[in-house]
Length: 141
Picture 1 (cartoon, one colour):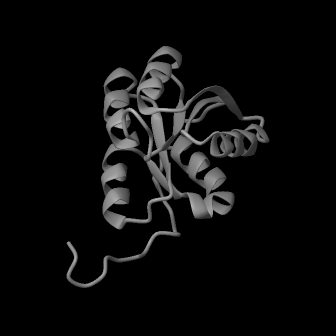
Picture 2 (cartoon, one colour; picture 1 turned 30 degrees about the vertical axis):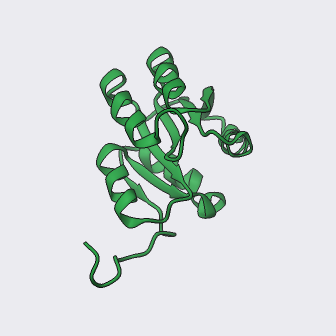
Picture 3 (cartoon, rainbow, N blue to C red; picture 1 turned 90 degrees about the vertical axis):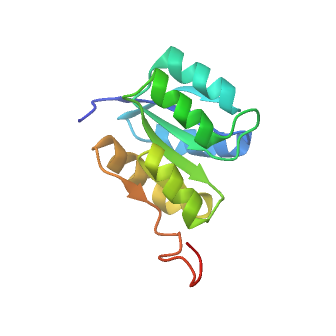
């Protein structure tokens, strides 16, 4: 699906990251930030109200973590695409996030990966951060 202007909601409890994400995305005329949220419960409410095309969603949120918020968002806005944005470099967490959402960006790689992730997900593709370890260490499942 192609969007002439994609409506995006940015969800992160740390205002500095919300500002960074919003300012990076707003540089592109095809992206429009329509809302922000600082916790998981507010995220579900905003997404239900705004029905955005895409959300950038932190995993480590207060009140309701990002994974659980995404599950609830799937129920109220099934067509909204989700790019998870997290400090967590655990492959297990990233794989769980990808079962719910469409993309996963590690915050340490955000400057290089955020725009690519959003563009890929809006084109119907998945994005998995190259900053994550390629494989699990031996002995881990």
